[in-house]
Length: 247
Image (cartoon, rainbow, N blue to C red):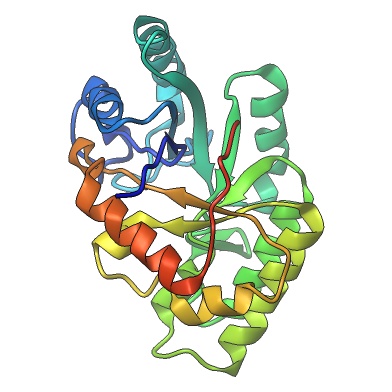
């Protein structure tokens, strides 16, 4: 049985598609043996409400204060960080920098679920090459700690093909250049999604990359040994080692 002692990919019910009380996530993570826990709900954007996907910007102070209080309460049991999982939208670039600069949050992970097209936010289903370019630009900024589910673009692809390989290589080259880890996403394993993709990660071994695991918790019960065991079996099959990520 392999041990996971960190997780920086944890959501809350504020996003509208996760369930469970805030404190339950912390308690379950501690019970599982997590020593470093990051809370990273889907980022709130000023002037951009998206019910069922992310919380409203007006919830920012409550989000920060809630987990600052829990961090103090559980400081003897777990080291906590407060951040966001964020898409990179160019029109919000200064907002990301401001959040980090002001110290409102302690980290960002890049979760590129969809992109900004002519001022509108849409999936990449018809343009996965744009996904690669957006990830490339995002990691070059130096504000994202790692790339969550870097193979998320495969949700819109029927099967692995030459274009997928081109997209993957752009991502790998960018992450290698910026020394940004990529994530093996346990939610994808748990829900049998197209990611994490074995073809994608086999190809990644041609590059000098760092790897992390992310629980991508949307339920306190997502901190469980069977899912973690599956993730480590996946890593063993691919011959990939994860780093002990410290934020």
